[in-house]
Image (cartoon, rainbow, N blue to C red):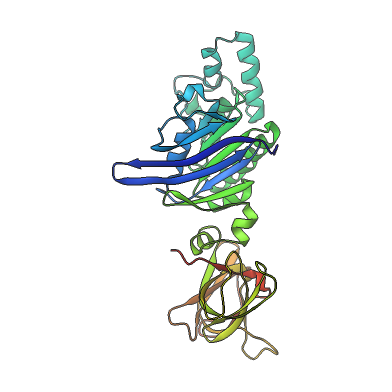
Length: 367
């Protein structure tokens, strides 16, 4: 990334009738950055993308591109291109004509159009498909044509609205790598929206987790995954257990404290995260399922929260084991491990634990 700001959103709000869709979005995107807006259906991410593209008017707020206020500019006056989930190819035009359409509108020469179209096809690895019609292409090929059509003008900013949502899992993973390769090769800024956490973690420089028209958290993939700020982010990005407890004591410098927290009558260690609670304060801990260990109660020196195994399930490469906390009411803890089996059986008494205090992070308990 260049460190130069390409896009800035300031206080973007949008309502449809009485329904608030966007509630004050601020965002700064750098040149060459790949940023993903991650959220469930209806959270406002597509509306935000359409406002950036000029396809939707913001109710309040401003949109800046390269330092210029383009809030009231029409889409064709913004140096922005958009790729849609449904491809939006012209069905009566072949691949070459679809990609070169915008170049013809610019009245470029036939030779120039042919050269630029061929370069775009090579970029998406579809050389030789110039004369194919969209109906004769697979879903992945049609999506590559849509990307090539958007990139043929070399826009500084490309917006992608769930472009891989219609593809099967294997092809989607392949296209994730292809899109990241293209973005890095060209140095174009990508703003990508998806509800797929794996896509976001695989591709992004930064992730904005969106919920109910606001950003719940914005940060690097590592920050969002390892230091979620809220219980919603912890559960939406990856799989996490949320445990309720009370701070017993804390040690260490401010902002880097290690806390002793009472959970279901057992003292455990946790990292303070963004919060700075005092002893006696109620807190919520997020612990990723892959960090949880279930130990036998009679293991020498073992410590943890007493629990009883309630379920085992194999989920394509991972074994998930759940246990109810003995003194935790309806609270359950889940552990995930690579493999297909475990000596633990339903009904076994165990101790739920984690190795490092940094693997348990304080979060705001917002569902």
